[in-house]
Amino acid sequence: MNDSTRSQEMNFLEMDFDGDASLGALLTALEPHAGKALVIDYGGRRIRPGYHVTEVKAGSFVTLDCGVNPASWRETILQVEDSGAEGGRDYLSVGKFRGILDQVARRVALDPDARLTFEVGPPGAAMQVFDVDALHLEAGHVVLRLTARSAICKPRHRAQQAATACCSPRTTAGACCAR
Image 1 (cartoon, helix red, strand yellow):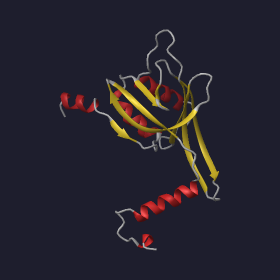
Image 2 (cartoon, helix red, strand yellow):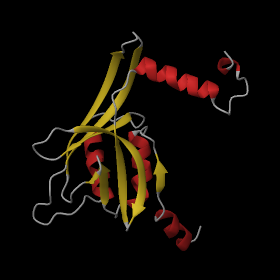
Image 3 (cartoon, one colour):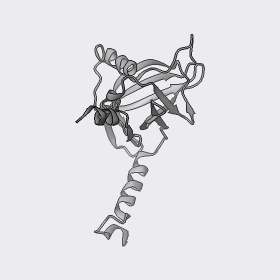
Image 4 (cartoon, helix red, strand yellow):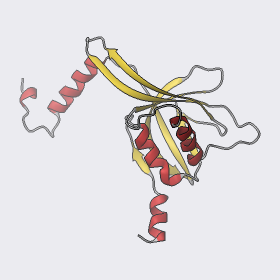
């Protein structure tokens, strides 16, 4: 691979996570873009320059949903304060963002396969919970697009997904839709 091809690849980034990103997948996607600014879109707005990663949480969850179905998973939660620029601060660079997570990983066990969640909000307002939707390049910086996490009834959601999968045109059996 020549330098021109490598440069073109490093300047291309279009990745859809559809709300199901892991910490490791995000960090890997960001790796070639260390010198670019990391901009976060959330809740219909763009985060202001000078935002601050206030806390990184690594947790294990064991739950029981309303259908008495147990579940367990690991999750990494990044808490971000949408504070305006103080003293002309700019957006964090991708390298600085990754450096923060590297520093945390030296003290807290971060599972690269853990589900990734963002808690974001401006100072003095309630934080909102977001999943990672997509990453793309825009005007020379990396845009991390977050999508709000909706409350769902998991048993009903699973049943709807099963019905959709069963009745989709890709299904050749078709028996479940013939009832």
